[in-house]
Length: 218
Length: 207
Image (cartoon, rainbow over all chains, first blue to last red; front, side):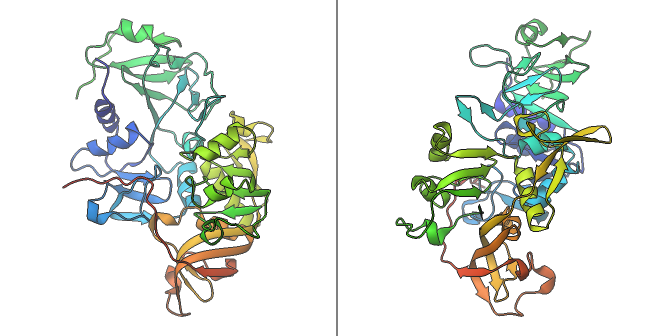
């Protein structure tokens, strides 16, 4: 079975380590905040100028001046700090954020990522994504393995305009966890009940399958 | 060029827009939402060019961009913030790895430092900065509130004439010098506004 959004978020959260500063992109990455293991200290960075982002507010705590990068109302945890966008991207560009998780349209086996526009169809703009992928060492891309029509999103070469070049080393899809090394996708884990053959069929770029590919554990 | 951050309410909340020029170039992270702030300038077709990182949910922005009516220079958010910061700090350009190997880097000078590729990005300076702060004293020393700081400090420093709308103006001496976010040297005009703060995505939890 393909992973649900919640399972994707749970698997992302398994990458968190105590003391990490983490930037979570809009969508599934944001959900990972709900699965920070108890007792672990993870500070969430929101690129609009907040370190120490907390959960959504209770109705009576809503503050128009306290939002995340997706413009959703949020709260602050104890020990949070606030700053300008220039300061925020200084910490991102300067490599101070330990883990970045973001979505994409396509990733290829050279570690390229495309996530901000589909020529002639959709222009979202890159927001902070180009800075995040250029500034971080440790990045996880989360996306569906294939489009609704069954076209692979893990390619030999991205077809859409790039958000970043040779910067992605780890991809979590609804079917698998893969690393990108030496111009190949390396299959590390399978979603429960999903076979290597199913994953291989939907991976357009070169895929290396190690002898042992365990199922993800939740 | 005008550098806008948040919303230029005094002009943009008036439908008539008398005296507001056409053909503006605006640098702002996004164009806000339809029907407010820059959205009104878009409606009136007063903007010729937008320098922004995010088109977002502004349907009019997207439509004018797709039709070619509005020129848009999509700029990564951190690069845009740094372009304004550099502009205000007298630095004409800087190198950044952001955008190298992407459409953003096309046509820009590339240099290698310590084995990594960087592109040269030029600073932004504007004729006017239009920004929002929380509190000011009469010297223009400013405090921002929570995440409403975002692009405002850099936008203010990068404009030749900085106009800042604030929620409250206090007497000189009432702000602790150690806690001022942006010194008044950058601020030319203050407007005390009245605010109805809009929330774009009201997200709440229960218990």
